[in-house]
Length: 172
Image 1: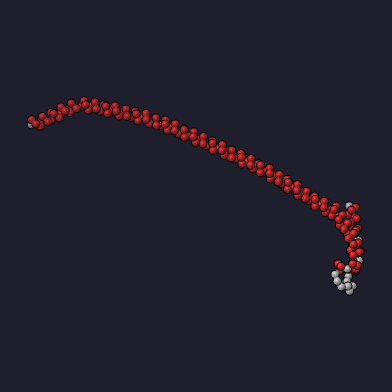
Image 2: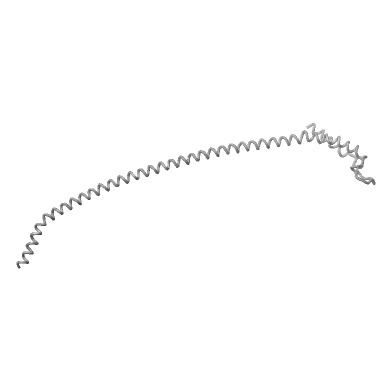
C-alpha cells in the first residue's frame, strides 16, 4: 500500500515537465538530434525508468508469474485427469473385450449343448420310430403268414371246387 502511494506521488511529478522546450522556436532539423534537449530527456529517463521498473517488478511480473503458475497447474491437472480417463477407458475396453470373449465362449458352449441334446433327442426319436416300425413289420409278417396259411388251407378246397366245375362242364 505504501509503495502504491509513492508510485502515485512520483507519477504526479510528470506534468511538471517543461513541455515548452519541445516547441520548435524557428529551429529547423530533426528534434532528436538537437543536443539542447538531452539534459531534460535524461532527467525524465532517470526519474521515470526506475518508477516503471519498480511497478513492473513488484506488480506486473508477479501477476504474470501467478497467472502462468495457475495456468500450468490447471493444464497439468487437466492432463492428469485426461491420463486417468484414458487409463479407465483402456481398462473398460479390456474388460469389455473379456466380457465379449466370455459371452462368445458361453454361447458356443450353449450351442454345442443344444446340438448334443438335439442329436440325443433325434436318436431317441429314431429309436422309437425304429421300434414302432419293427412292431408294424412283425405284425404285417404275422398277418401275411396267417393269410398264407388261410390261403393254403383254402387252396385244396378251391382246387376241388374248380375241378368239380370243370368236370361238370365236360360232362354236361
